[in-house]
Every structure is written in structure tokens, then in C-alpha cells.
Figure 1 (cartoon, rainbow, N blue to C red):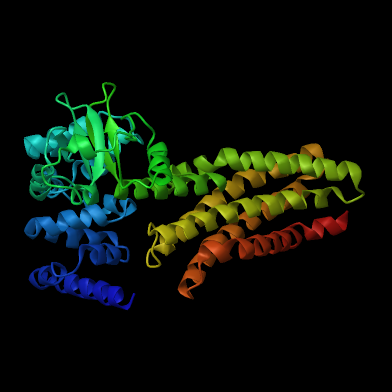
Figure 2: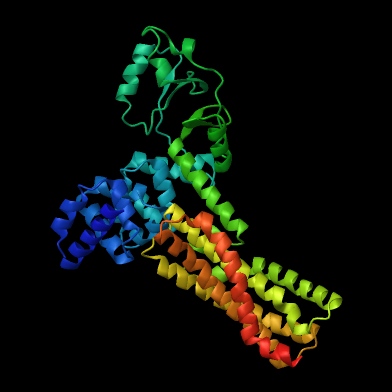
Length: 447
């Protein structure tokens, strides 16, 4: 962490001074993984300037960085790059990574970039882009090692030594004359038998494979279930089309876990990617409306079976809506911090976005609650305004707490994923009660 901080500060200082040569000399000596970590703490302009410098003068390092940097931070880099500057960088990446990067580029820009790449690499990328998103075909690599059945072990070892084009040689795949997948063997097995042995004598014919249209989540489950480092992808004729390697499987598992966590909280990954407060609020609106409807029905039940004042029946709605929005903010922040999508340096922008979303949704549902109070409970306009205002205040405070608390826990080296929910649940309920009694309490006394 200390080394990362020093690197970040050094990059910022050299950028301010305009010392491009010194900056380049420094960053080319840094491991790409360490540089990708440092990029999380740079703003958009600093990221763009550093990456442009690498792309112009150290294409290999720029490609390695682009492959390692979190997908959430890539748009900041790509926006500042022309197709002419970007194509040589993408040229050095595996085709499946290029597909992932170009998937977020407008079609016109994508076609321009592909036209500037070498023909073979461009065709590989275009072939993968033909497959649907989130399928094995979209994430597989076509650079694998496959040899005929009659190949001897000695010949196979020589082929492995020359297989510089292959992305990762975990397994050696055995195919027939038509490219059909017949068997597989590990490199360990290859090195433990006599050199004259043919591959068909030692290969395992029990090959676990998937089709290009198989969902990527299913591919990840298969790799996990059978402890595979790579999963072969075959077409309808059992011809080997590509392989999905373990690094892609790990990425899929992380993406799917994040998606499931967001869904449990009533939000989505699409919302995270949009910068528009209105669109982000629109993603949450249906789930919040379901919670709101249930809360209003609960208020009617309380009114029917208790002697409480009508205004007090809306306390569960205020608490529930505040709890929902607080949990959503906490989930997005905690998951973002744990996966690297959000760094402490840029967390402020995420917090303010969550507050804006909460205030907008609070205004909408506060108005609806005020109307419900007037229509269903026969309350006056002032009381309706008070209960609606308490809901708006509760949701605003809950979003602040839910977004800030994971960041504070991370700062003091406490895992936000473990500690956030208990604190948020209790604190948001207290804030909801405080909001209700501060705003609507005087009107409650009048009743």
C-alpha cells in the first residue's frame, strides 16, 4: 500500500511538471499489475495522460496495463485515445481480451480500430464478436495447442516448446484429421512417458467440453466442479474451436458474484456503469416501488388492528424505504471497494451519486406517501406533507450512511463486507425514527 501511494504521488508530480521523459522512464520499470493498482487512485485526466504516454512510446507496457486494469476504469482511458493510437496497443492483447474491450466501444469506432489492426488478429476478434455476450464463444481464445493423434511424445514436446502463440498451454488437446476433439492430456503426463509413445495411447478420451453458445456462468461452474485449468469449446461437429482459460473463468465468477449481490440489493450492474442519476434511479424504481407498496399495505393493517394515530402507522414505511436505499448504497460501495471498481480516492463521486439517487427517489416516494396518507388515512395536506418529508429525509440520511460507512471501515482496515450490514441496519432504523419524529412528530402530537 505504501509503495502504491508513492507511485501515485510520483506520477501526479511528474504530470504536473510536464516531465514526460522522466515519467516514462519510471513507469516502464513498474510491474503492469502495480501500475494498474495505482491507476485506481488517479483521476480521469491523469489516467489518460499516463496511458497515452505509454501507448505512444511503450506499446507493450500499454497493452499489459490495459489488459490488467479493471474494466470499470477502461472507459476513462479509451475516451482519450484515437483509433490510430489504440489499434497498435490492442494488437498485442489476446483476442478474447480485445473483444471484451471493444464491446464497450461504439460500432463505428470499433470497425475503425479493427481495420487498423493486422488482418489475422482482426479476423479473430470479428469471429468472437459474432457470438452472443456472456457465452463461452465470446470469452474463449482461439490460440491453443492441438496435435494429431499419431503425434509422438517427442514431437509433442517440441511443439509445446515452439507454441509461443498459444495463450496458455495447460493441456495438450488431441484432434483427428478433421479437427475433431478426440482426447486431452496434461503436460505432466506428456513428460512422464517414453518419447516414442503416440498421443492416442496416453490421452484421456473423457473430455469435458462446452459449446460456443454455453452460458459463461455454466462454463465457470464446470471448471470449478472438475478442477479444470481450461475448458475446450467445440462446435456442433465436435471440432475444437477454442478454449476458455482459468483467468477468464475467474473473471466470470467475479462478475457473476457481483451481479448476484447487486440483484439481492435491488440494483444492477447496468446502474453502476451509467453516470446519469436519472437513469440510475430508474433502475431502482421498480424494486423500491414494490417495497413501498408493501409498506403502505402494512400501514393499513396497523391502522385496522391497533389504536395508534393514523400518522404513526406510516413509521414502518419510512424505516423500510430508508433501509432499502441504505442497503443498496452500502452494497454498491462495499462490493466496489472489494473488487477494485471503487478506490478510496474516487469514492467521493460515488457517495454523491448515491445521495442524488436517494434524494430523487425520496422525493418521488415521499410525494406518493403523502398522497396515500391523505387518501387512505383521511389526513390533512399538512400531515401528508410531513410524512412525505420524513420519508425523503430518511432516505437521504440512509444513503449517506450506507455509502460512507464501508469507506470508513476500509480506512481502518475492517472488512466492509463483514461489518457493514449490522451497522447499516441498526443505524438506518435509528435515523428513520429520528427523521419521522423530527418532521412528522409535531403533527402526531396534534392527533
